[in-house]
Length: 295
Length: 318
Image 1: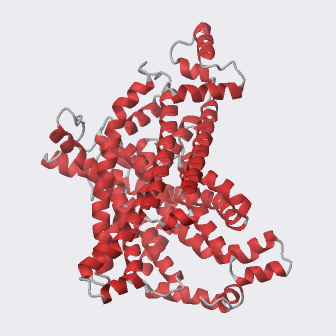
Image 2: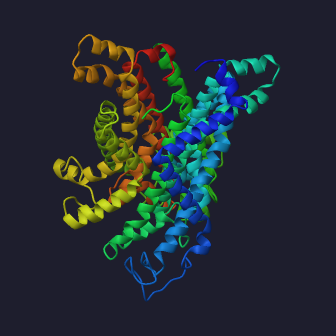
Image 3: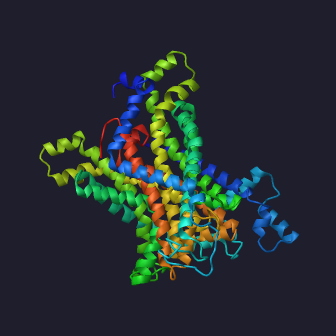
């Protein structure tokens, strides 16, 4: 990377060409396009699900429990209480995405400022490193167990537990990118120019660190979605009767002998969502890589 | 080296102290009077008074904390509210199950992840790489408890190849023990294998294009020797790093896996305790996990500096 051209390019009007280059690379990658379309579709369905779901999620029909997929009126069948599986999957996916976004938002709001501070101010680095170590010592499930014990199990608490567990990852990538940017000439120039630390962080370092943060977020969302499924499956997340893909799998385990197919679909949806995010994240990382296309 | 060791030891000790403080105050943040929580069924004023005295709940906080640390260090985690057995004896029966499960999962994941990672790097741009990459992406995205569920439904129940649940201690019958634990270990290892594969692949790609590998090739070393003796050695560090970093994820995964396969380990004990509001057990579990994480990562760091001497100099694993 040449020291003189890149920093100016990243802050000036040339950032538009960088953006078009990244977008062009993404458009040329068929995996990126497919995963993006899947995610966009999932987002639309999730947003509209309360209105487009064929049945109300709580509508029980005890005359028709465990209808297999393909039954008239219930494309994906019904569950143990005769509720429509398709409707519950749509609303469950909505909850998954909600937790994913909420968790990642939590980790970014706390992690980004700490990562910036750790990378920029030497004195803060040691303190923030101990904080990171401390967070890492409590795995997300243990964090969720503790939170559920103190505050009860809910969608919000599950998202917070997952988000807190993701903070160290955010701090790590933001810190190392800040260290890299800080050593570049345009930051030194701004400091010589009399810019305050806050100004340098907000105007020069944070904007240039966004791509790293973006990639981190795209890999953190699928992890959070899987986390929510695990917590709800164990009963520590979304509470029934609210629909969640994790609790659907827990019910399926109970009734596995009667309706083995019920264990398949919610899992496929969770995997599909996580896979789309992971594939898109990989493509985004490659597209943002200044070294060009590798792997 | 000694300096690095001392710094790391001091940092670990500090983190341990901080996590103990967090758990100590976490327990006090539980809804209601801690004496009430500890008392369980017997809530007579005399019983509550006795508990307050025994646990020093009538003392000032710093003193309480000192006594708390002293009790924990002696392995006195209190008595389970539900079963009445000491938490420490519950742990001695549960921990070996989880340790065995996790160690087996790490071994399987390392073998599979390093193998696939090397293959993907060496066969770059060919079908073998695409297959390995695709498998890794799926391994990262699949909910493992769901894989476990499907494995039980379609492998254990349908074919009877593996027992669907239960556990046999290794000292009682090693073969039967392995038979019970191998499927859960495979399920637990898949996510870790995917992460190890991706890291190994990118580390291998880096070292394959490095000068020392080019030198090794130029002096006429066979390709296999170049890969195993030169390129792969660096990816060893990757595996150690990943296992250290993923330890938390592994503990979380073990909890879920044990729950699904009905293994009587640490995880099952944890989940049961949450639903029964068995606070002494929850507290012990949280504190022990944090301690294990900190101590194991301290040793991972030591291992680092053994594998890669550069770290001893800079003191910062890159």
